[in-house]
Image 1 (cartoon, rainbow, N blue to C red):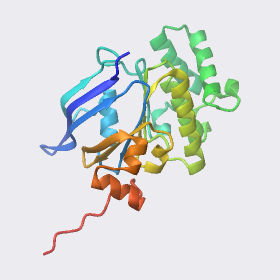
Image 2 (image 1 turned 45 degrees about the vertical axis):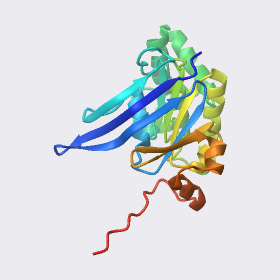
Image 3 (image 1 turned 90 degrees about the horizontal axis):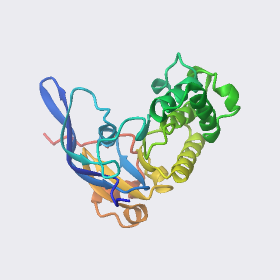
Image 4 (image 1 turned 180 degrees about the vertical axis):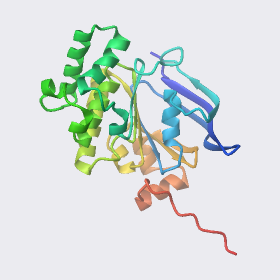
Length: 264
């Protein structure tokens, strides 16, 4: 197995608006290791979600990308759904309101694993059981609006792993949940990644949450990667002053820091 799952070289992403291009990521160099749990940490606007969307090929049409992404784990660009699964922040918005939970999960297995509908539906039932949805047989026939926020996120995770992907990208999957449910979702992701041998890219603003499970942490600020390394090393011996200030102050990274205005 290659020692590198994915390699980002000089990755720069900007968005066109009003005739100008604003940079969301600037010259990012980063390697993702097979089987690791990598946490992408940053405040709002740091570029962490843009990084996840870039890796997944989900950027909007007005995005401009330069640099390079290599995929030694695949040999070519991965296919959404089959090679990687994506868990979005807003589970309610990412699920189809007019299809049952079972239909949505089974569709992924049918499309990417070549299963017949009956077999795919059986896999959907198995996955609902794996993500600990109560009464999975009945849950197959429920619709997203009938589920709690935590249950909807579990359904999204089941759908994301339905085709047995090598990579799972979770973009702020716990930010809309209370602390108890957050911990349950993180524990579930850890379990699934370990059991299925997946690589996990976990995007979050919560450095405390990431410190409990991530093998490595990559810290972003204003579109730049300021530091990356093993979790224990980053937390105990941060090399960048910004990382040190985050750890020392325990600020809420969901809120961008205040920038003092220049004196008149």
